[in-house]
Image (cartoon, rainbow, N blue to C red):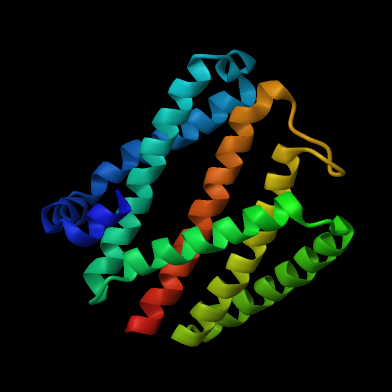
Length: 196
């Protein structure tokens, strides 16, 4: 859906002209997340797959709307570039999580430091919002979501951090999807700022 925002102008114009339609996917995402986390029956096959499909389609439309908005502001293939960068980062992080033997306590400390730095940058950006501040904030967010992605991947694979119970793989899939998409959106903002 995101690449349609870049290459299909009628789709992009529809999304920008009918922004009110975004309310429905947002409500779907909230309802599905609530159901998946609160109702154990929803995490059973085949309902879990149906919920995951609706979640991905709804969340995909929301992300596609963001891509349409950014693509309407910037010339050039920013969405495709952000997709390629996100795929590369995700592959590297997944391989790192699968094969690296590291101390995860150090990652928790790194996550704390980067999170506090991100909060401070956000507080400064409230008063002095410049493109460089947005890029710094988005870069820190990419690092944070990358660390989250390492943790979630390690939990899915199992090991010294433990693992997800077999009936919660749908929740693990949602976490993975959300972290990758958030990383994509931050990379998209960085690329869009660079193109302006």
